[in-house]
Length: 189
Ligand code: NI
Image (tube, rainbow, N blue to C red; front, side, top):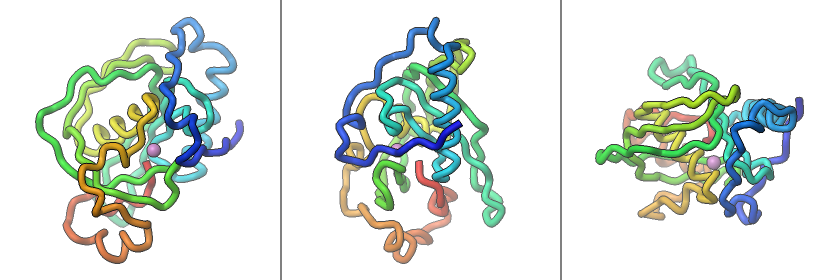
């Protein structure tokens, strides 16, 4: 168990496509230890997701988890999820725009347009193939994290940079502009 250092924007590891993990290597000690360390790191920094390149490991592994915030009854929860070699198989035509932050862009936020629903294929940490049908907040977090394993960060997806904000200013001017649940999202993706 270890809390790993999180790479910040400008570190080339964030811009490299991660190596797929050979399925036969998934049960191996180094991969399982990396997954455990990623979970610890994600929880330590209150992320709702973390991708291996963010901890300087150029591999296609990601972890997700979000717990409900007792102050807001409608904040979506995401149970702990570990995905290896994730691929987005299908995007909905419908898109929406919402705030995203990132542990690799400390305290920077922006509104990003994403598909509202996606289908993802991947392996779980046992090496079993899984298919995930995701919508809403989970679909958004998955698109953000899967971007990381392909060397992309959320600002690459912003079509209008005018919402790019520091956290404090976002809270002050934008956080309560409407009732959308993820407007109140405190955790960084
Ligand atoms: Ni991120």
